Length: 444
Image 1 (cartoon, rainbow, N blue to C red):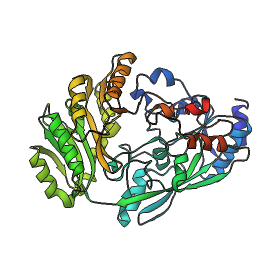
Image 2: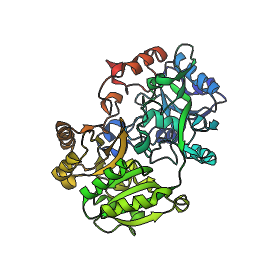
Image 3: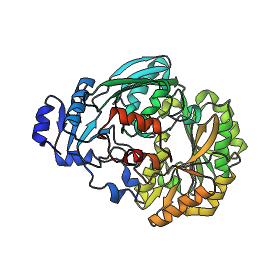
Image 4: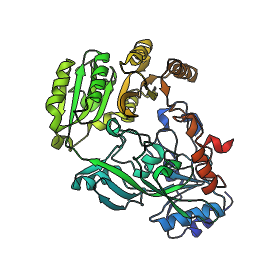
């Protein structure tokens, strides 16, 4: 750094700051330890200072200091990402957004919030007028709206509303730039894609407008099956049942259910299962579908019962990986899309080919209006060469892999350079200070 920490703290006086090395190190990490490939690359990468602005004016002051002294700046929500999105590779300032938590307004179908608002807090207030977030990650209790937009792609609710990058799922993003004279830019319409899922590499998000969905009374069920492919086909059939309103369809091959310690008393030993959220008003047609596939409901909670205690949401998406790794820390994961597999033939092929080495975990989502299985498979890790071979085999067979073992923006799910995001970065971050070395295109 070109300025002493003491002088920087003095320059940012009045803004909450953390310089304690232990705390700074903790706030420099996310869940990159899910990946044995990322651990050696990111361990020990820490910032020099954490700042917690309470309003946009303080954000502008931080941006000004970053540019003036050419200090790297990395954004952080709640640190629930899995790829090192908020881990600073070049030290510097970590801007933690937890104090930017004002809900500006909520109306039918739309909300405006500051970036650090927790998704659970937004839903609690929106539900008072009959609305809720369209989609949330499994970490919804602690995740922030801005962090989800910057680092996420979809989640619980994606079976109805698609992905975060789908037109309409993000309406407005307000960002602070790192120019010589930092300014505030408000992006609307398709322009929001300039910073959507960009890891905070090209703008400090301060406020957002996000669409809301009608809030249903969601019942929670676990359906067990003796055969994985029957469970998978049940999930696809439920996804295709337009007359049944659902928010989550999460299908798990054995032995994944055995990793869910809190659910052990409910799920038959050795069974495969589907964890689902369905509108209570559609319980009857849902039960008919369960019967058609000869499933057994082994766990059921009404919406009122499900509102208390742990939710089934917290056993799905990458919470599944969290529970699996709690049981066996050698396990890791993959992220896959089965884009053209309506009869799940490719799902079956991968399931049978890899067996217990790559254990199937499906999350059904909507892509271009069609419900498909996305997989977050649990992988028995041996070494990086074998992991790469597993990835290459999937891709050779037509399975799209969103690689979770890289912190580079373009190498994960995009696989291509997003010139719109790159050009926006050139304008708003001309010195490349924002989350450096995460955007490959900037380094080229």
